[in-house]
Image 1 (tube, rainbow, N blue to C red):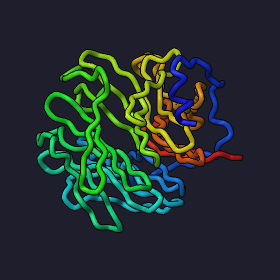
Image 2 (spheres, helix red, strand yellow):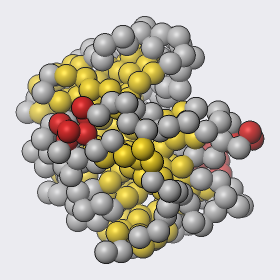
Image 3 (cartoon, rainbow, N blue to C red):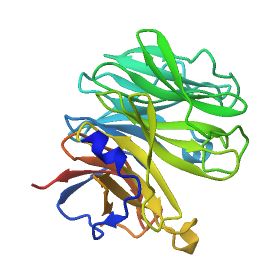
Length: 310
């Protein structure tokens, strides 16, 4: 199914905008000012980050969290001044990234409360650079990216070994693309249980393409039709991929982000039924449950989980 999906590059078919067919559950860590989910596993457990107050939000000091049926647990790497949980497999292994007091970034894996650091040996140690972990599959493969002073590179880590991936046409930075480190290179969103990786290739000058890497090939995935920006966040075992898009480059000009699902050449739009400012759709599990976050009319950021009603 995945092979069929990535072969249909010039797809333009879309469904009508929808949030229907799902049960919407808001995710807000108690007492937080912002809650941002990043992954939902096949058991419906959601992980992400939250900000306790406006000062932490302004300075970027976050905490990881796990939401299991409305029961929240904070995930804090003991070596970090700030932590974010970015993935959890069905065995309960949690991965993410922590930032130390010097601004250096490192990945981590939390196995039953025991934290281990993940550091790609090629990553630069400097503020804003380092190793960033984005997901883990049921085989224990950990996917992320590392940044040096010029470029980002995707890696898979397993059993103490790092394998690096660089997409075709990836540039060297700095650049003007939408990249967290303002660097060119290869970014990553997720890894499925077959080892397929979703990600984005950033050029030296402004520009990018989304891809799914599988069987030694970077397969381009089309942008949402008519969008100004369209980014892939995940690929799952059911052959779905997806993420978010906007039709203009800024919210001030009407560029409200919407989620999308892409499968077999067709896009499905997922809009926010709870507020006017759009959603960022970050993840889907193999049963079709979705997770992401939205901003309400007061400016507060909430997470959500959408569970198929059927």
